[in-house]
Image (tube, rainbow, N blue to C red; front, side):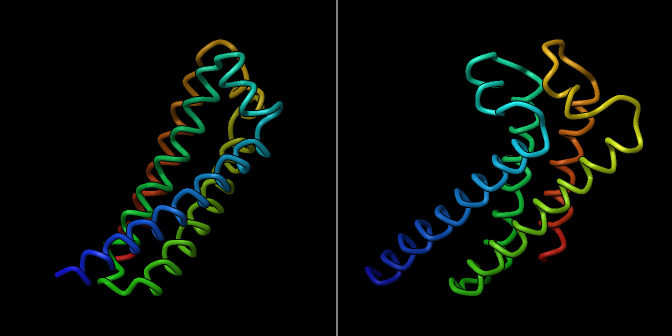
Length: 141
């Protein structure tokens, strides 16, 4: 029983580290795609659009991470590799979707995200990030 408990602790810690790493990469990706510094926009300027976009990115990655853990069937090494790989695919898909939506819609999405006025386009973009996370998580089953 103790061995299983220790294995679970190691697994939880390992998945947490991979999940946190993916969320940090997601943070920098959103920062790259939007003008200005995402941290300043959210924590200093209290920009709701930027907070919504970053939150949806983190939630999407969280959904993918949960899906990858579920699909790992207890194989820690395979699960960690899958989590990172599918998380990276999710981040790339979110970035491509952001750029495609920006190209297909009026205005510049990056500029809209940094606007002080809450904008419906950010809700659409954020929903897309969460949906991408769900699609990739379901592809793992």
